Each structure stands twice: as structure tokens, then as C-alpha cells.
Image (cartoon, rainbow, N blue to C red; front, side):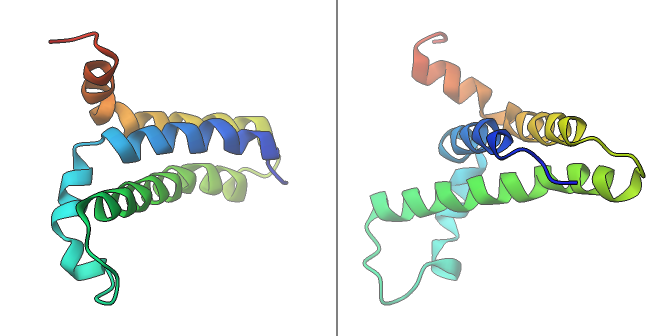
Length: 109
């Protein structure tokens, strides 16, 4: 079965928030000599944007594994359930970024 295309919107939105605000983005940023191309100018803004993009993509991929396993292993799987599993996985992976999101919104000191 195929999931609804509209399911990608919340998954991508939450993953982008995770990519920007996750504490793990610093780790990806620091490791830029490993993954950033030598020929590209290593401006900190560009490296940070690419780090956030890598983390967002990784979030989508990791959160999609349980949804894919559900669709593969359950004989009469429903696309709505797989969508909920995927969104829940992305939300769960985004929990470490929540304090930074709240700080950016001005809700905590």
C-alpha cells in the first residue's frame, strides 16, 4: 500500500525543526571536514545549513524505518497507521530539540 502524499508535510516540517534546533547539529557541524566537499567555500553559515539538512534527512530516514517495517510485516496494513507511526517517530526524534525550540520562541530563560 502507498502512503498519502500529504503525510510527508508534517514529517518534513518536524524534521526541519529537528535539523535546525537539535543539539546534534553541533556534532554534524564540527565533523564538517569529513563530509563537506573540499572545493566548496567553508563559510560557517553554509556549513550550518548543510549540517541541518543532513540531520533533517537522517531524521526522516530513521523515523521511516518503523513505518516501513509495519507496512512490510502486517498483512493488512493501513496507510493511515503507517503515517501515524512515521509522524510519531519523527516527533520522538525531535524531543531533544524541544528546549532549543522553546528558547527560540522566548518561552524559557
